[in-house]
Image 1: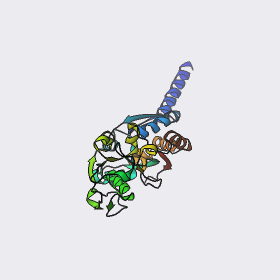
Image 2 (image 1 turned 30 degrees about the vertical axis):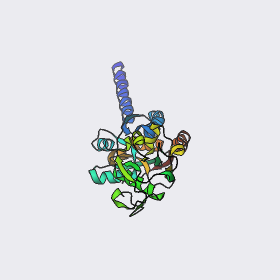
Image 3 (image 1 turned 90 degrees about the horizontal axis):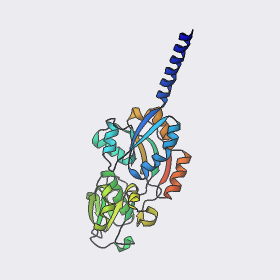
Image 4 (image 1 turned 90 degrees about the vertical axis):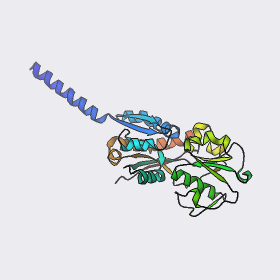
Length: 268
């Protein structure tokens, strides 16, 4: 009887251990430092309470996080907006989908040389991101201010070749998005993504000469391959990132520089 009891207890311990291991998943999520990694850090403790070990791997570019998620080095990533993902999937043949929409980062125009866009001189040097969707996004923002005209003001893949009118003869310098804040001294103005503006000490509300409105379609998302996206752990993370509590954190911490979206996406 004693032996049977010991065996029974051992079996129960094994079952408990196996059950715990099944619930205690690990999620490796690639993210750019601000605000994406900060938002993930905010929900890390809550994820742990759900049995999820959330591991945040920081990146400073817009290519490697998608490649790493596609080949399985990462379970997913959080750094990009939906139009960028759509173009990346088409151009690179990766199999990634949107898991949830978390926030919007209004893109802004910044300068170390002028205080108002009306002071932009003829032939000024303008820095824009060199990736297709953010480059197009920056040109559409400049077009909205009347600085240029483009062939289709709704085409997110607009390039400098699609500029139809350039009354100030602006010269465009296409750089890696992460390099633009550091290049401000060499440029007259630069169009910068918020996740690179914030670490450089630029506040969109205070420092931007021009900023996107709240109607921006560039919602930042968590992306993963379809199988990972449907996993219980990833769906739990999506709930945490789109919760009212996280929306409050985003609103209070970034004071309008980052705007919460809060929507879990349908995964087909």
